[in-house]
Amino acid sequence: MEVEMAIINKKLAFEDIEPGNQYTDCTFTTSMQAVRVSDVTFHQCQFEQDNFGGSEWLDCRFVNVSFANKRFEGSTFYRDQFESCQLIGTEFQENNWKDCVISGSQVDYANFSSSKINRCRFDDASFKEVYFRYLKLVGGLKTSGCNFEGASFVGTKLKGVDLSQSEFGYLEVNPDDLKGLIINQFQAASLIGLLGVKIK
Image (tube, rainbow, N blue to C red):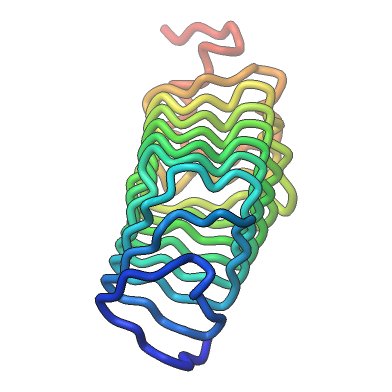
C-alpha cells in the first residue's frame, strides 16, 4: 500500500478519512453515515464510535488499535491486517472476512458467530473463549502460535482448519464437526473424549 499522506495527532471526522493515507495517533469522531473505508493505515488511533454495524473495511491496516467491546455486526473485512490490536469482547457476528490476517493481538471473548471466513490467517494472537459458532469457512483457516483455550466452534464444520501450531486445552465443539480438523498429537488427547473414547 502506497502512503499518500501521513497525518499525525489530529482529531478528525470519519468523513475526513481518505484512501491511501496513514493516520497515526489520531482520534476519529462518531460517523453519522455508513462507514466505508479503504486503503488506509491506522496506527495507534482512537475511535469514539462504539457501533460499526454494517461497516465495510477494504485493504486497511490496523496497528496497535483498540476496538475492544465495540460492535461490528453485519460488517465486511477484505484484505485487512490487524497487528498488535485489542479486540477483546468485540462483536463480529454475521461478518464477511476474506484474505485477512490477525497477528499479535488480544481477541479474547470476541464473537464471530454466523460469519463467513474465507482464506484468513491468525498468528501469535489470543482467542480465549471466543465464539466461532456456526461459521462458514472457505479455503481453510491457518493459525500459528495462537491460544484457543475454551473457544467455541459449535455448529462449525472444521475441515481445513489447522490448529496444529496453536494451543488449546479445551474446545467446545460438536464431534460431528471435527472431520478434517488438523491438530497435533498432543492436542488429540483433549478432543478424543468427545468421541466417547477412553484412554487408560
